[in-house]
Image (cartoon, rainbow, N blue to C red):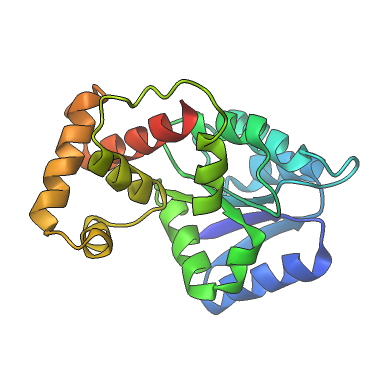
Amino acid sequence: MRVVIAEDAVLLRAGVQRLLADESIETVAAVGSGDELLPAVEQHRPDLAIVDVRMPPTFTDEGLRAALRAREVVPNLPVLVLSQYVEETYAVELLSAGAGGVGYLLKERVADVTDFLDAVRRVAAGGTAIDPEVISQLMARGRKNPLDALTAREGEVLELMAQGLSNSAIAKRLVVSHGAIEKHIGNIFTKLGLENTAEEHRRVRAVLTYLGR
């Protein structure tokens, strides 16, 4: 796997690069600003971009805006965003765009190396990895919920899907059978009007619908 990192904090950038190297994941470029991310992505065409939200010069949302532009340069480029905060406007735009390969983790999660590396691999493979706190804040924005057709249990299943849990992990979390989870997910696909295409693609689209709407 080949990765581009955009993070202005030198120590964190070096730390992430070291974690990846220990797992034989190559960092092909490590930059300190959103403006530097774009040429790095265009040059290296990486398997994943790991991007900080707040970078020079204004330290507001440069990273998210750069990530969105990067996905225009390399369509459907997998992007894993790291942030201390949930930047709602651009977060929704990023999480709603494309067919998948998106993640949004709060930086405190990087301290859990296993979870972080799992998120890296999942997003690079086209899946999602969304911090539960990000989900909570985005869903508390007060907009009309388009997922009213889902039952409470189906909503729980979809939220855990958004966190990146597998069917088996969801079944264990909710203390139900694997078959019950498969049935719930089938119902979710049907109620969201997702076509009978590849399972992983429908799963990602369901999660993006949940987050983006």
